[in-house]
Image (tube, rainbow, N blue to C red):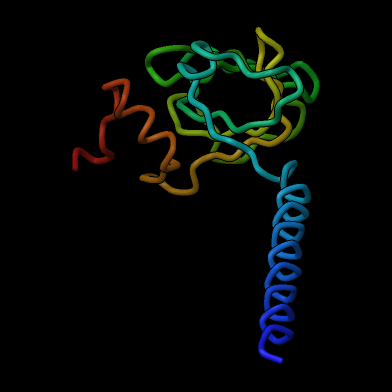
Length: 148
């Protein structure tokens, strides 16, 4: 009688383990397109991503590179102090988007230009995305806001 109970417990544990592995696999499969990795311009130049990979780029909008007036298309360069990547974006930029300000864009890189589908800009005077600050610190060009 005890061996039957033990056998039943082993079967239940095995079925539960298989169900857990399948559920984890399905969750990972469902989220694969929703995960966007962050990269700095220096990381993109060092290891260019595949042209079909969607990811986020962040840094400062390089001074003198913001070109508006080509219809809805806007062109600019984003830099982290170590490298500069040309960006094109078709759409309306956030109101606070300016040169020498932090930004994060989502899109793809074709080997020469980052084609952004979404642009996020700072929302107040001192805000800069965490990833951008870390990247700028690695490059040695980060300056805290207001001298703090």
